[in-house]
Every structure is written in C-alpha cells, then in structure tokens.
Image (cartoon, rainbow, N blue to C red; front, side):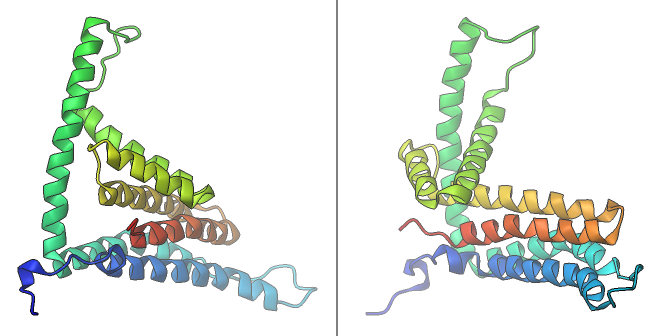
Length: 220
C-alpha cells in the first residue's frame, strides 16, 4: 500500500530537530576545542616556565557564532519538515486558547479579591498564558537534569490538562537550556583572562548537552 505525502507519518522528534541536534553537538565540540586551545599550551610548557602564551580568540569566536549557528539550524529544520511546523502551530493555537481561558477565569477571581501588594499590576491573561508555558519548560528542563523519569511524568501531567502538548513543553525546555548555555557563553567576551574564558566554554557544555537530549526526546 502506498501513502500520499499528506498522509505520511510525522517524524520523530530526533528527525524533526535533526539539524538543531547536529548544531548543538557541533557547538559542544567547538566549546571543548576552544577551551583546549587555552589548556594545551599550558600542559605542553616546561615545568619551570612561568608565563605561557595562549590564544583567547577561539573562545570569543565560539561565543560570537553560537546563536547564529543554532538559529540557522532551526530554520533548516522548519524548511525540511513543513507539515510538522504546521501541526505545531495549529496545536499551539489550541493550547494557547485553553490556557487563556484558564488565565481569564483566574483573572476574574483575582479581580473579585485582588491579591496585589502596593498596587502592583497583575499579569494579563495573555501574559500569564505565555508565562505558564515558559514556566513549564523551565520546570521540565530542571527536573531532567536530576531525574529524567520524573521529568517525563511531569510532562505527561502537564499534557493531561489539555493546556499543553508534549512537543510544546519539550521545545520550551530546549529553549530554556539553550538560553542558559548562550548566556554563559556570552560571558566569554568579557572574561578577564583566557583561563576564565576556557572555563566558561566548558560550563556551557552541560546546558547544550541537555538541550540536545530534550530535542530528541519522544515520550511515545
């Protein structure tokens, strides 16, 4: 039996995000290599040599190119899998509407009994909706570092409410991990010395490795 393109099964997440995962892996290697350009000359220097000349430029280059590398990979994945992108956008509209309905109901309750302090305005329903997804992604990413099974259970719990899809939560967890890595890598540009820059490159790796893992996770 043949299948038409419109009926083809949508790809697993590791296929859907293949270019992003490859770019994340490339970035891990680049961070390690940049740090190595600092540490290798020190390791090769004679024991009695006090000052060792090392290159800071590779660390800075990795820092400057990381965000563009990942953005291009995401664009390539979207171009390769347009049906998946369309499905994700459709699901995002549905879950956004569901979260907005909950947020609006909570907003009405809070208006009846406002909890604010010193007149600090509460988030609007739309703002609360966006914040809920970001918070869910953060929670799943943080949980995955310590207990992947617990993180999976958390995703399933979030999905059961109808306000999120597994892909939404996992994608936001990827974004959270990537952002943490890029912010760490950004500090390389203002590092006081090459050793600090190398350490920051290596500190980026766990965040990027987590993002790669989450980008390939399929709960099914």
